[in-house]
Figure 1 (tube, helix red, strand yellow):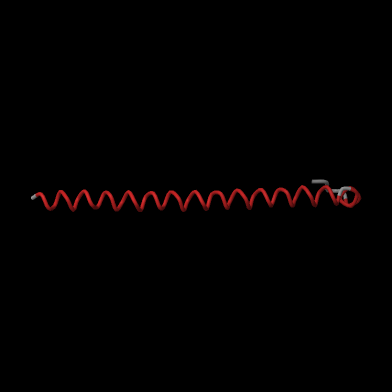
Figure 2 (figure 1 turned 180 degrees about the horizontal axis):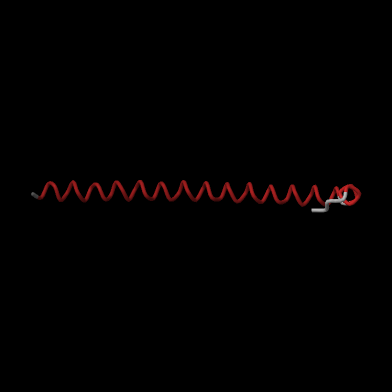
Length: 62
């Protein structure tokens, strides 16, 4: 990022586009992370249910 005010004004459009692109990319990254987190939590929930069923079966065998 330029620090000189004249440079900022001269490159304002480019700087604005770069910043908008960056923030769009960051937002897309976080959405992807959130989706992946939801999928992993769902997998863990299902695995937990399956694991609990194992103990139910083993408990019924005694």
